[in-house]
Image (tube, rainbow, N blue to C red; front, side, top):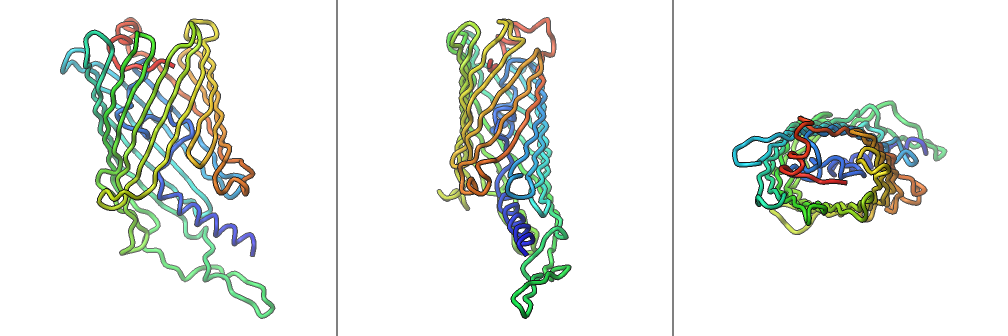
Length: 348
């Protein structure tokens, strides 16, 4: 009885989680999930990132999230020194007892043009849109009508439920847009500011005929700052604020804040071997220590969530393990210095 009750609770948790957008603790490594206008704001022309997250293993069947993203930045010459970034975000999320899964395929395009010929400052405008699929396996569930009370107060469990689901899989389209400003202070401090709007068409999702959930519009504000503290050390700050609205922009809904402070050291002073450590925070949810190692064009990041939410006691403050692998390079190595000076950048 207790085992099946826990399975049922796990199912309900996974269903509740489906109403929130998929994300990662090392959120700065998946910029398209923050704001499509942050695509291409890095030092280089190519970036490929793979992410894996394992969450809630200490409480129920774990939630697993896989992410792949790519960004290719190139000059487009509509105006002098402008750039176009082509991005792609792939997500596969599987949650809880019901194996509730979310699959996202989201291509993006970000156009960046300079605002000043004197200093490296760019305004970027982006659009992202693609297909989404959500599904679950009803055979994995144990529902309340399967519990039958016996004469001695015990319970038996029927092999199947009378509950009928009209759909176990739904598909829909989702679109977002964003704008960002990227600049440099005294040729050393890089920063960006951004704003994005997700779920532009407010897609409707439902597994019962006549009963749907609307993905209301979500507003995002983004900040990034990277400044040197010595010849080999650098301080980096990231922050996002999200607000999901109710119907017709009603001032209700879900809001959250995520932020991180990082300190990096260039071990040999050549930019090829860098170690970074820091603390991330997700409002009312988790404190997340993180460490990153960069070797040449490759980077690996590892983080672990320490839960501070309502499930912290049940989970013994153990939340989620996450690992990131990233590759970054230039399209034409002979033009590295020129590309660093004439395109959006963010050193770290």
